[in-house]
Image (cartoon, rainbow, N blue to C red; front, side, top):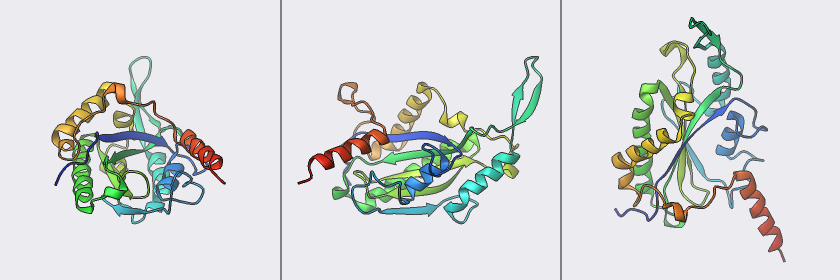
Length: 230
């Protein structure tokens, strides 16, 4: 099976709690991922996704926000006072609540190969399970999207349930690191998995375009649609 022409794309991000009406929160990423009305303006056609439960203790994804609130309410993070003594504090309301991995194949949906995509999604998911394990993280669900330009998936992960660890709740060890951490992650992933599915690990700097936010991308697309109406 030949590789699709293109560059490796994987990204890790973290998001705090919040309702679907507030951008870049747990509520909004769940709503966008599950293609809820009001959150699909960037989808060019009919929504098409598949949700898979992985290692989550939850039966359905809709239970995730309430589970996060419960887990974060009883969690306690270790901290230090100015004199060096340690104490435990409650988790901040704006602390990262969920981590996400996005991984995409460079092929277009018109070239979609189900067998290749299945191999890619399963290999990548297993790799990230191993990568996240030392950080005591748990991958809850995998969300496959087939309604945008490229087939891709999202992994939604959090710290393990409180009863399986020492009640700390911190996603910063994975989702808020420096550039070198993610550079090393990209290199390691390519050498162990990505090389099977991508021709190159990274696009040359001279070929890269400044990243446009989703909000601006939607505005630009709507402006183009208006200008081309008869």
